[in-house]
Length: 322
Length: 261
Image (cartoon, rainbow over all chains, first blue to last red; front, side, top):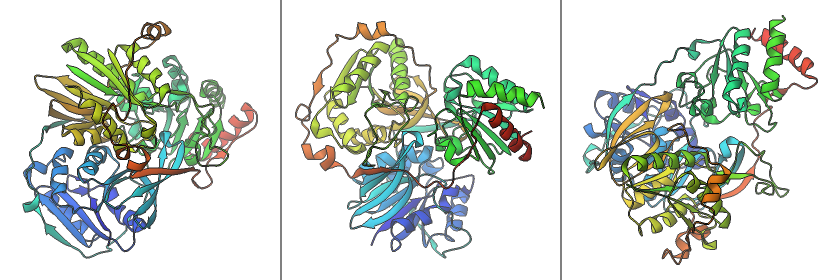
C-alpha cells in the first residue's frame, strides 16, 4: 500500500492553509493510500497544531526538539530521514521552506522528485501522473513520476481543494525519540522584517499595478498619473523591485505584500502564480498586456491586448475628462 | 575564493509567445529566442563581486548542447574567469537529479569553496542546487538574497514569505541558490562578448566525467515530461475589442460599476 506523509508547515501555533489541502492531493494520488501528517517543532505551539491535525489526518507524527523550533530545512531533513520509511511519498508545500527542504530530501531518500505540482491523475503501476507549469506559467505539462522507490513532491499552495470541518479522528504519535543527530552546518540566526515603505498598498481599494511591460524606469510616471486619476497608488510585480525602480513595500506577491483591493489594474503583468498569490479577496481584475497569451488573461475579469505605455495615458486622460 | 556558478540556456519568457507544435506534444521551438536564465545572471554577478573582494576565480559551468557555449561566453564577458561545457548525447532527457549527477562529477575534479545556482530556471522546479548539495554532503540554502563572506563561514539571507529575510550562518564549502534582486547584474556589450570569443572552453563528455550512461539522461530519469497541454482555466477574461476609444469607454463603465472610479 502507498504510504503518504505530509509535512505540515505552521508558525505561531497556526497551520498554513496548505495543511488542509494535502488530504485532497493525497486522495488524487491514491485513494487507498495511508496518509500521515508530520510536524516538527517544539513546545505548546507544536502540540496545538498537532492536535488540530488529528481532525484531518488519521495519524499525526510529532517530532519535538529544541533544534527544530525554527524550521531550518537542513535540520528538518535529518529528522525526517529517521522517521519516514523508504519507498514512501512525502508531500510538502512549494513555498520558500519546501523549496529549501525537498530537493535534498529526495536525494537522501533515493526517491523521485516532482516540484510545484498543481494536479495529480493517479498512479498506474509505479508511475504517478501529475501536472505542473513551466516558463513562468506560460505552458502546462504532464509529468510521469517513477514512485517505485518513493517520491518527494511539492504541491503549489491553493491548487487542491481544502478540507473543511472534521474529517478524521486520528491520534498524535510522539516520535521525538527517533529524530537522531540534529546537528547541521547551517545555523538559523534571525528574521529581518521587511522594510515598511512610504506607501501602504495593503489598505488600497484600487491598485494600479505595473510589471515588466512598463519597460523603462521613466515610464513609471505614466502609471503614477493613472493612479492619481483613479485616486490611488502604484503597486508592482517582482521585476520592478528587482530593477530597484520601486521599493520592496510596493511589491504584490508571495514574496511581497498580500493585498485585498476591490479593483486591481494589472498593467503589463504576465501573472505568475507567485504574483497572484499576493492577491486575495477576489478583486475585479483588469489586465492590459501586449501579449495575448499572457497567463493573466486566464484569471482576469477584463482583458485588453495593448501596449500599456500607449494605453495608460489614453485611459488617464479619459478618466480626467469625466 | 574559488566559486563555481551553474548556468543554463533557456527560452526567454520576455521575448517569446509560446505555442505548441502541430502534434501538441512539444513547444514549437523553431523561432524561440534563447538567453541565459535570468536568475543565473544574478548568481554570476554575485560571484564576481565576492571574488573582487576576496580574490580567487569564478568558473561558469553548464550542461547542454553546443549552443549552450554562447551562454558561457556571455557570463565570461561579465567577468567570469573560466567556462566548462558538459555535453553528451547521453545527457539528453535528464531530470533534475541527472543534471545534478553530471555537475557533481565535474565538481569533484576541482576544489570549490562556494557553488551557486539560480533559484530556478525555465522548468520552475528550483531543484538542482539542493540536490547537488545533498549529493556533495554540503550545506545548502535556497532563495538567497544577501551574502556576507566571513572566515570559513558566510552569512546568507534567504528571501521568505512576505518579503522578510531569514538570516543564516553556513560553513564553507556550501551550495546556494540565488534569488533575483540580490544585486544589479552588469550590462554586457558586444565588445565584451568579442573579448572572450576566442577563449577556449573545455567540453567534457560522459566518459570524460566517468559517468555510467544509465545514471543520467532518459534512462536515469525518475521524473520525465510526457507532453505539453493547454489547461482548462474556465472562461478567462472578457476581452474588450474595438478602437482604443471604444475600449476605454467600455472599461470606464466597468470600473464605475465595480467601484474603481
